[in-house]
Length: 229
Length: 395
Ligand SMILES: Nc1ncnc2c1ncn2[C@@H]1O[C@H](COP(=O)(O)OP(=O)(O)O)[C@@H](O)[C@H]1O
Ligand SMILES: [Mg+2]
Image (cartoon, rainbow over all chains, first blue to last red):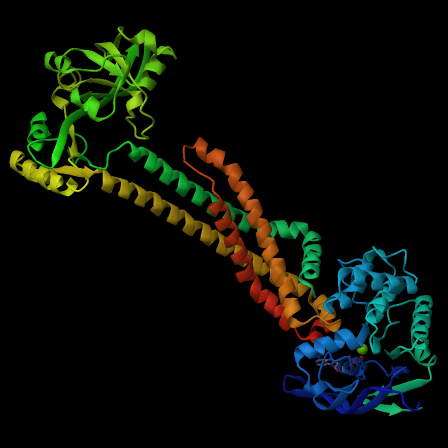
């Protein structure tokens, strides 16, 4: 652990129980983890092990049944709906397996959205979005809609959208799950490059090949984590 | 998000769903057009009523048999004379009205004729543009003279009225000499517009045209607006004495003021009725909007999840969908107003008076926006309340 490094994620004894009718399903069981600024972490586990549930909690899209969670020092469990929205907007960038681009917006409009929700002026948002898309090699595709882009390009737009607001943390849930092997490799290179530039990145995957490319891997199975490093 | 950006986002969504938007707006289009037309018809109707009655002195009282058709105990010239005895009454004239074929130079035209005591002319602003008016001699000696309304003279002569003065016409096959043409008095809107009628002396009408069927009405002029009610009382008393068989009950006594009020009232009732129809149409169209918005929210559940993930607040999701509903209905409203403008000539064709007005446009647009807000709110609220996780997991 690097001295002085800021603790971005501090999750302690997280339990998440889903109630399906009368049945209770404990999806996360006493999960604790710390993620430091500048980390590049892969959370690896088989399908159904609770990875996405964990990501949703880390990303403040959902709250745990019990436990404590501090994001960048802020007590997430005490935050209100609007505060959570602001945290998601300013501190977190999401990348989804299915890209989740808005189909009626162009690439640049998609990338501008987080800034616009932040209240940025259109011109500023456009400039930043253009810059990020260029960085990801999509300078020629600014005004294409998602259905006019390949899977790899769509995921790059999604990555641009995740990092456009310079978040503290990029959370990616199976970002290569819907990509061919070439695009997967490209995407991973992008994440590595972003990490080299100082971004904190958490990738969730069931793909061992993805995990092999990073130093820190957190293993999860049946809602419990095993830190093998 | 800044409102301008939100609006842009909404417009992109609407624009890329043009067909859906248009189909959703159909109801609003019809509803708004109806409201616009209702207000136009209301204004037109009121204008028509006012125009009709502007010629009528409010002190005018009309006495006529209560029942149409054959009258057992008709009014007579004598009644008119007796009415004059009242201090509250300035004038009382019996007049006879009928309609029939008016023929000139083998050109035949169905129109109305009115038999009047000669003094009636001065009291009703009937002045001649050519020839002369009827006079007491004509009345006393039962001269078969006629004075024509300006429009009738025009029609009979095919636009060359001066030639008819001094010529003979026939009314219901009886020969009359045309001695003059009245100045135009304007459209009174009623069936027997003065401009379209032929005027003859009262005694002449009684003798030659209507005979035993003569069934006059009596137009009475009260001395002033304040005396109208007393005059009506005096008339009632007189009728009770002179028509002992049925008394005043068999007659209708109408004063122009209350007739005007009644006509305005019925025009207003008509408007209200149509307005109710328009509101119903808008409610139905609003339910349509609500339906479409529910489908839209459902279709975009995953998008809503994504928006929440990148930081959209509940309020912003709510505004987005509410704005979408409002804009859709506003588009419908604008198209409705345009449709309304196109419909006005059609109404004119069917002789429905209609006056388009700013207030009609505003009322239509306001109602369409209210429809959008009211019926768009619940779906938008549902969208805003979606749990981000459930929304993201939705397929
Ligand atoms: N919203 C939910 N309601 C009920 N059960 C859920 C919900 N989300 C996930 N689960 C269940 O929790 C378990 C873990 O799911 P998930 O976190 O998606 O796993 P992973 O992403 O590792 O495949 C699964 O059995 C899934 O069915
Ligand atoms: Mg998953």
